[in-house]
Each structure stands twice: as C-alpha cells, then as structure tokens.
Amino acid sequence: MRLGDRNTMVEIRRFGADISGGIRRPLTAALGIGGAGRNILTSMTDQPEFANMKFFEVGVGERLPELPFMHVDKLDMYHAYESKIPVTGRPLNHTEDKIMRRITGTDIVYVVAGMGGETGSWTAYSCAQIGQLLGAFTIALVALPFNNESTERQELAREAKDKISKHADVTGVFHNSRLLRMNPNIPMTRAFEVMNTIIQLPMREFNTVITDRDIIHLKRFCNTVDEFRIGAGYGKGRERGKQASLEAFRSPWLDDTGEYETVLTVVTSGTGSGEMEAQDALDAINEWAPGANIMWGLRKDPMIGDRTRVTLLAGIKCQR
Image (cartoon, rainbow, N blue to C red; front, side):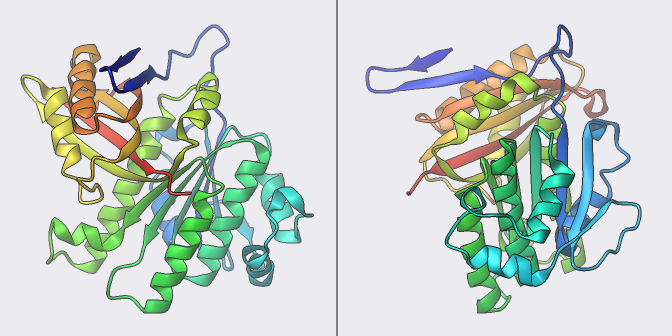
C-alpha cells in the first residue's frame, strides 16, 4: 500500500504471516557480546517466543555455563577492528572463523552488546561483519555509555557504533543516559534492568512475526538507514492503537526531528482482533513521521489483556 500527496509517496508494507504452506520462522542466532550482552540474553533462553533462536555468549571469559560459549582472542578482535579491509575482502582470523562456523545457516543474527569496552566494541563489529558475510538479516542492538563514564569509553562507543552501522542491516542504538530522562533518581542497578528489558523487546516482537520470506524485503527496506531508535507504548480503550503509538513517540530514545526515513513496527494485540488497532497505529505513525516508509507486523499476546502495544524502530536518515 502507498499513501502520500503530490510531493511524496510513502510505502507501507506488511510483514509476517501464519506458518503454513512452506512458510517458516527464520533460524535465528543471538550473540551476547561481553557482560552487557550476556546479561540481556540471560532471561530469554527459556521463553517460548524464542524457541527458534540459538543463544551464544561471546567473550574472553565464560560466566554462564548454561549458554554455549564462544571464546574470543582479544588480539584477533583488535586487528580485525583496526583493519581497513572488511571480512568480505580478506581471510578470516581464527576467532572470526570460529564465530562464523557456529552461526552458519542462520537467517537472522542479533548482535547484542554494550559499547565502550575494548573487547565488546571490537567483537560486536566483527560479528556484524560476519552476519553480513553470511547474508543473514543482521540486527545489532547496542547500548552507549552513561554520560558520566570516561571520555575514552564514550569515543570508542561512538566509533564502534558508526563502524557497525556500515555492516548491520539494523543498528538499534540505546543511549543509557536517556533512561534518566524518565527517572533521574533511578538506582544504577535498576537502570540496567530496565535497559535489558527494553533491548529485549524488539527481539521478542520481531522474532514472533518475521518469516523467512520477509528477510529480503526487510534488508532492502533498511539499507538507507544508519541508525534506529526504539519506542514502545501501550494503549487501552478507544483508539488504543493510536494511544500506544503516541506513548511510543514519547520514548526518551526518539528525537522529535521529523527526519525518520524508515519505521519498523509491530502492533501487539491482546483480546482485540488487532487489525483496527494496527490501522490506528499506522495512521498515527504516518502523521508523526510523514516522510517515512513503514513496514509493520501484527501479533497476538493474550498476556496483555485488553491493551494494545506498539513497538517501533525508527530509522534516522543515512548521512553517508
């Protein structure tokens, strides 16, 4: 479907379908890089929404023996990070080859990491390149340091994020300090718990909607965008799809710039049919980001009752 006026045409395309007639859910790998990535994946492994997802801890020291562990050589990661030649143009080093062999055959690769530390930043960059090399739909979900962390961590985080965005199909960016806009007095331990839940959300929503046939369209849809920001909200009662979208727009990670080029969104319906809520949500998104192309999916979740949830990843215009 296309909507627009005389000056602009907006593409609105649905993804997701029931699993039948040869359609399947993609084979998915989630790589938790370092301590931050590992912590985000910890509570996901036994949840039915992730039955098609393989989880891996990737780092220099194993801490969760129940997760398959991939040890990385820090020197390998340093040389790969500093190399001017991407993995598509050079032989893989030992660590890169090990990672690639473990995730070969997957359709979607999630790279989940906190930026700022050397090993995590370097390794996340390599994993994003390996996902691209395999032709997988590669989604990097990265958290940037709090503003009170060192200048060195801040600079490395920004540099690594920019390098990752050149290879991942989706680079979802979460600025830790923006969480404090909602509650400046939140304890640090609680802040990390909230961040973990938020970063898990797009993985949960998209994993239960995307099919193998959507991947080629999603890759095309995202190829002009450097960076995605997340928003999520709930609505209840009349026009609850619109209410959920309006709450999502107030996310601290979204800027009111009006320059979003692409929006990926999943509308989750509880007891309702979902179709009407989705239309309300799409109308609100089209008004909020009038120039943005939209890909959307719909899922059911009886656990949210008579509410509707809208989860969106809004892509900032490519600056390259």
